[in-house]
Amino acid sequence: MGDVAGGSAHTPTVGRIALPERTRSPWWELGRRLLAAMAILVGTVLLVYLDREGYRDAGDATVEDPYGTISLIDAIYYTTVTLSTTGYGDIAPVSDPARLVNAFIITPARIAFLVLLIGTTLEVLAQRGREMFRIARWRKNMGHHVVVIGYGTKGRSAVETLVNNGLDRDHVVVVDPSPIALADAHADQLAVITGDATRRGVLQRAGVAEADQVIITTGRDDSNVLAALTVRQLNPDAWIVASVSEHENAPLMRQSGADSVITSSDAVGRLLGLSTLSPTLGQVMEDLLSYGDGLEVAERELLVNEVGMPPQSLPDQVIAVVRDEKVYRYFDPVVTLLARGDRLVVVRPAKELPWAPRPGTHNEDFATDED
Image 1 (tube, one colour):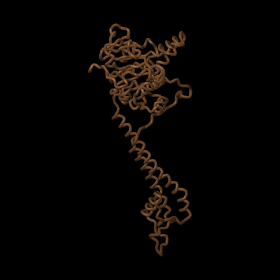
Image 2 (cartoon, rainbow, N blue to C red; image 1 turned 60 degrees about the vertical axis):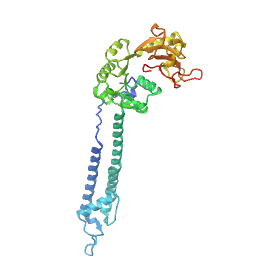
Image 3 (spheres, rainbow, N blue to C red; image 1 turned 180 degrees about the horizontal axis):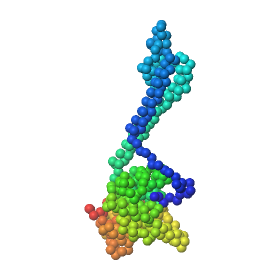
């Protein structure tokens, strides 16, 4: 579902059968390994008992029977102390066949028994237990997060922008069916739900119902529309930002529930055209879209000492004013003078400079509606 351009190395083989991975509880895995360990134990007991004439029991040895009689209980006892590497030495193989069986059959069985019962069992319990605990804790703490549907080039850039502006990676959930996207998201330390975002169950596992924002950026406009419809059904209040490849699909995307629609092909085309007509203008637009250096576009609160001032007189370069959830250009007569509750869209240095301090970052009072 990502918009990653994949070469032939990443293209799935046509007609290849891929069975779903089975997910079993750690207790099922533990039981299976215990049964395998019991099979090794029982098989070794039978080997020892059937060849009991080749063993000596020092505890039962008498003058009449210097080797002692090996009973079934003795065989069980010898097998358990041998496989567990305890080895008290009271029962030992004395005949050549019995020693060969111990060397070439019972010794490998002992190694397999220890690896199977101890090493693998502890690994399964620890790994599955930690994973189940992490997922349970993640679900418990998840809420007011951002869901990113499609982790291709656009999805990665969107997440990078959010993280660079202060969003914690723990509050981002990626939804994408691609194994390439899964690997990329995990490399970026992001939680991933693997699956088709047009399915309700997949979005429910991603916690869409509790999300504040949802970014939809798959490689197909039809998938974006279906995903937006499903998201809006699960969460009527989420802010949905979606991308479309073609401008003609933007109205359909808005009707599907998207609050903001970005037409990627038109945006790229306009930047290409501007860069062709005016290379310097293209450089400025690229500077505004990049992060961390040069200029940036930001939204901030209005300060108390800025109330009643015209937008053009502020230290930041104001390009728009948000009033009553509507956006006005800075030259609009409606916002000739700024009022409490306004928010400003500004162009400012990406990094605070001595000659260009950032208003609102030095303990100034904000002019909110509650003041």
